[in-house]
Length: 155
Image (cartoon, rainbow, N blue to C red):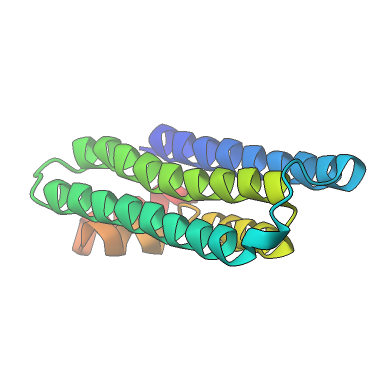
């Protein structure tokens, strides 16, 4: 189980680091090159259209993640459940990462700073969702010896 948890941490670190690196590249690209599109007349459409699409992507990712968790809670074997939980985590991380990349793309195209701030919110949310023992125990609704086993595996 420790090996599986190590995989979760590596996946989370890789995705988080990738998003942070892309954010840095997008910011400095925008600083040096400026806007790609002249969207000054369409501020409302770009900002709110992007925000709505980001919220939609995040909600879809959360919904799929929750459905996967419901399926996992019916499992009997803890080690198999822990292995399948990785898929649910990847789905959650993918939804957050997709929203971040879309907001970065819109920022690079238009130069609206609010779109970069949306990306930063996604980065903080991604970092907040790092795998930890309490999150796993709460997500899988583990009790007793299973919860203790998960706690021990994280140390």
